[in-house]
Image (tube, rainbow, N blue to C red):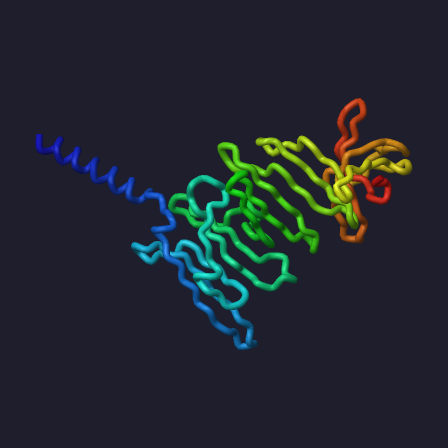
Length: 258
C-alpha cells in the first residue's frame, strides 16, 4: 500500500514539475535590461537583454545601434491579434537605413525574432488598425518601400503586398488566406494599367537560366514580381495565360506598361 502511495506521489510531483517547466511566459514574466556604451571609435551602441524574472535567465539579447531608452524604444503591442503582446524594439533611428524596428515574439517559453514581419523580424516601419484587424509592415528593399498588409481571420496572414516596379508604377498583389495570389495588377495614380509584350522575347526559368520558350508582340501578361540581376538588368516575373499558365522571368524592357 505504501509503495502505491509513493508511486502516486512521485507521479504527481513529476507531472507538476513538467507542467511548471513548460509554463508559458507572458510580458509579466520577463524583464528588459538595456546597457548603453560607446566604442573606442566613439560609436554609440546598446545591448538589450530580455530576462526571465524568476531566474534572471537571458532569453534573448541583441546589440543595437545608438543609445536606447526603455520607456521610449521598447513597446509591447499585439501585432497579430492573438491576445498576446509582441515586443517592438527601435533598433536604429537613422531614416536613411533600411531597418528601424525589430519584432520579438514570446512563444510560450521561447523568445525570438518574429519572422512573419520580414525574414528576420526587421522592418522600416509599421501601423496597426485594430478596427479592421490589419497590420501594415513597411520594408525597405534597396530603397524601394514594400508594403505588406496582414489580415486576421483565425490567424494573421499576408493579404496584400505593394511596391513600385517603375517610377510612378505600383504593383499590387492580393492573397487569400492560404497566401495564394488572387490578384496582381499595376497602377499609376490609381489608374489600372495594361502590361503588353512589345517584341518577340525569350522566357527564363530564372534570370540566369534561359529557355527556348518565348512570347510575341501583343501578348498580354501579368507582372508578379521584379528583380535586378548582378549586371543591373531588370527582370519581371510574369504570368501568361495561354493554353496553360506560364510563370517565368522576362527582361523588363520587353514589357510595355500602358
